[in-house]
Length: 122
Ligand code: FES
Image (cartoon, rainbow, N blue to C red; front, side, top):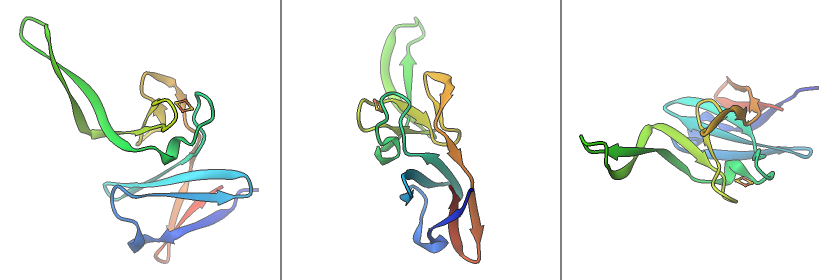
């Protein structure tokens, strides 16, 4: 049966922070981004690595010249990605979708805010 597991007090988590919460054998990464909370199972769909322990980085965007030749790459910070630390699979922070294959996505968990606390449903 699902339980609400305490993550932290809301004021302890600023934008860009992540907390890993454990309940029995389940680990969940809870993120705060632009004031909203997102939570995903800390289990990469590639080989089971701790996806939520990776860095957050903007989506990689290719830049092309007018003649369509490649110029450079940059990051689009408006679309943050979670990067699994084992082999670099990328997941969209706002949806949990695997960036190159949206049919794959991290298991999402609900986040509840009440009385100044942040809880994740596990
Ligand atoms: S286990 Fe995450 S990229 Fe391989």
